[in-house]
Image (cartoon, rainbow, N blue to C red; front, top):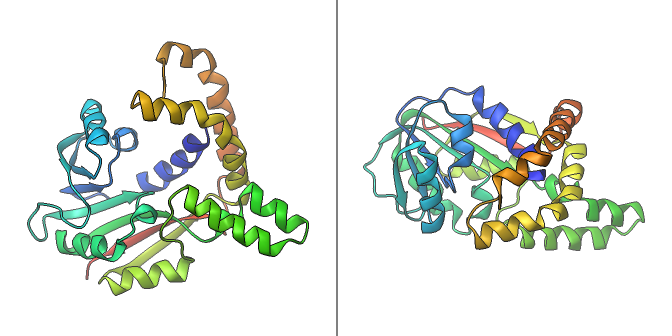
Length: 249
């Protein structure tokens, strides 16, 4: 449920952007997000995980799927007019190489849409709030570092830090949107333990849901809560995540 709330906010934001073909999905994963966001097929999806690419094939949303690393994509220069990456860049250790590769693949004037967490993401977590509430700022900071290690966030910056990183790779910032405000970050954090079975299913069965039939028994209540939470708390500045609209000059 936590992931669904976060992804729904991202889907809403990205659905308001202009996607000019050809389109590249950088870090497509199992293809579920793209299958919800797009009514028509995406030109290319790439991911470093062969298993995720196999799952993406079942979504039938990509014209082409490639298993490769983000810094070595077997495509010609300026092959795409749009590249998007949804909650991926924070997990890439050698990020600058990937950004240079995206710049190579993007045609002049093309758009690069990126959703990523900021340094506020861990600050808004339940554990960090707990320690700060007792005046334990040092422990809150250590918890934040542990939080990022657990989620494999290799790149954690504030808005200015991310902007500088993109500009160093040759991109121009067109627009920035903040989302996932403190209340949503806290709700997601508190809901995360309930997702443990889904994480097990993903690791063992390679899908988030063990049984679609059983899911239908509780999906209505889950959907109603997620809809209410995103309506009540989903907007506002100072969010823990951010959408960058970048372009290649």
